[in-house]
Length: 205
Image 1 (spheres, rainbow, N blue to C red):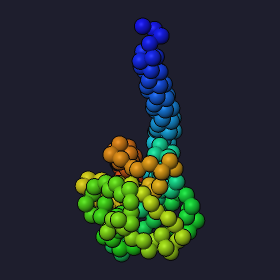
Image 2 (image 1 turned 30 degrees about the vertical axis):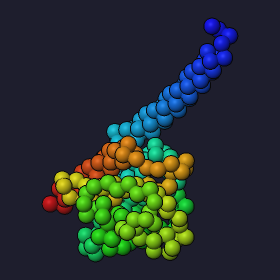
Image 3 (image 1 turned 180 degrees about the vertical axis):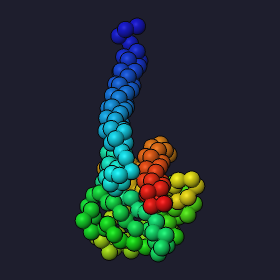
């Protein structure tokens, strides 16, 4: 019966469930719109890219896009210096943007080194419980890494570097969906690097 307490309790529970589902759908639509807007912005940059342009501008745009999509506090792009066998912070966004670029370390060390060596992503949501983590970088630059997602930059099976994003603003952990999205952007960056390098070789030959 309509006035039955059990019936009313069920209706209240069902109404709450529908409201929760509606909030989730609204959040998903907002996230999807944000994804589309950021990818369209990046697509416009890629569309007009030529080898004669500054490759770092495209990489910087890609890193910024990744940070916006994943809603993280900090991000960086590291490249392998084959002459010294080191990883070098080439682009950095966030709190250590002014101090971290140019810092280098043995390319086989740290989570980034593992990613470059194995050409595989790494999701680490508690870095101080991971033996691969290098706390020396945090200590030297006054930074606090809590969670980290790193994906390889690779072209033709060869590692070129690593893209890292650090600490979601929401405090939520990184997941496989985040890794897949960042890997797509890393593939774009690696292809652009390979394209620009090939063009330089052709010009010099």
